[in-house]
Image: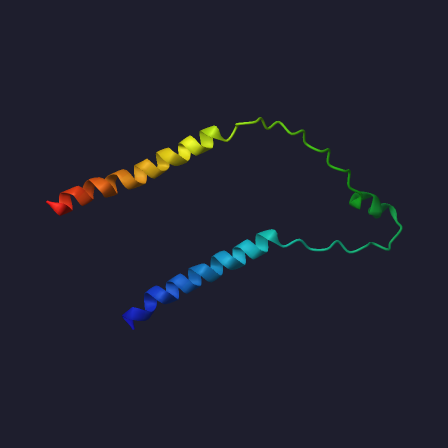
Length: 87
């Protein structure tokens, strides 16, 4: 019985994350309102203005450097501990 708890928890968490992700990305279709009363004015939307592209060439350099720092933070202790294991 103890061996089934860990897989059951992992499957349950995976299903919860999958359902949560599906619920967030679901877009319901707006039903057309056939009532021609004044309430239909509330459903009119204004178009969203397009955002200007402010990206610059080479703007990902800092992201690459940050990735390298993260890799060093993760792998440095592993390599240091391997040296002590070999002794």
